[in-house]
Length: 122
Image 1 (cartoon, rainbow, N blue to C red):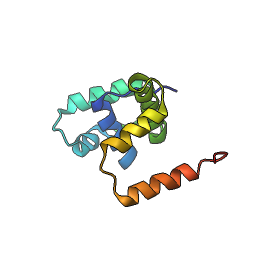
Image 2 (image 1 turned 90 degrees about the vertical axis):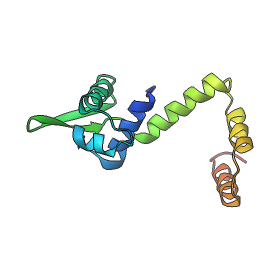
Image 3 (image 1 turned 120 degrees about the vertical axis):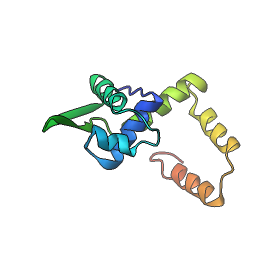
Image 4 (image 1 turned 180 degrees about the vertical axis):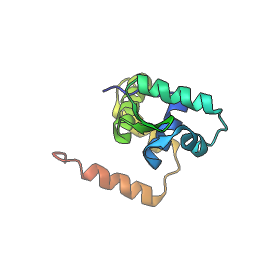
């Protein structure tokens, strides 16, 4: 499944992934931007129409929950980024990450460990 999120949608999804099923006011309270209740509701309804969020009725309102896993959204975003900006090359993406960031020795060690853990790779 190709998951495509705007920045605002990603912010709302992050709240749902972190906090679990939430009503609109809870999602709104978790956001760093001060958005109107109706704006957050519109974002949630849009996410639901895309199939990324579900809801159950709770009193007069709804409790919304993520219908897609965070890891699936990350993979989809990374595939999109790699395809659009790095001509599909994960090697170019990796080289850019390493070149542009001041990595700590701990981060470099962890990256090496992750590369070594790849099954079937030498």
